[in-house]
Every structure is written in structure tokens, then in C-alpha cells.
Amino acid sequence: MRRCAAASKTVLERAGYRAFTTDDGIDADQMLKQDAYDLVVLDLGLPGMDGLAVLRRMRERGQATPALILSARDQNGRSRARPRSRRR
Image 1 (cartoon, rainbow, N blue to C red):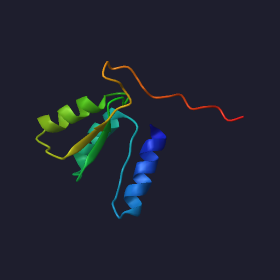
Image 2: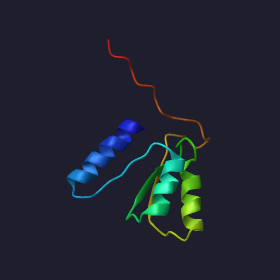
Image 3: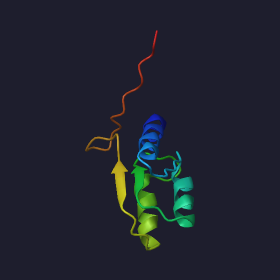
Image 4: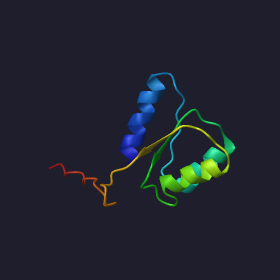
């Protein structure tokens, strides 16, 4: 997911937006406590605190920031992420 976050950050910055990333839900929650954002993109599979818990805490604090939730899970909650192929 780090590559996806890095690519998304690059695209947003090239479009003129400031973008911030973290790969941990606890860090994301702290960032959201300290600053206001126009949009939050969360991964359900964040370590430390999953994206849904981060969103829940945002809403409990009264933050109405729009959020986009990403997941590599199927409808049964299993990871659908494919392992990267090894280059030979």
C-alpha cells in the first residue's frame, strides 16, 4: 500500500494539492487531531488502528471531513492484495 500512497501523493501534488501520508493508523489519528484537511483517504488495513477506527474517532471529535475508504479485502474480509511478483 505504500506504493499506492506514494503514487497518490505524487498525483495530488502535481495537481496543485498538498498531500500528507502515513502508514500507521495511530499516526493518522494524531495528524487529524492537529490539522484540518479537505479530504482524508484511509486504508482499512492500516496497522496500529484500522482506517474505519480512524474515521470513527474523527466523527466522534466532530470532524466532518470527507473520507474515502480503500480496501484490498473482499466481501468476506479476506485480503485480496496480490503478492508482488519477483523479478528475475
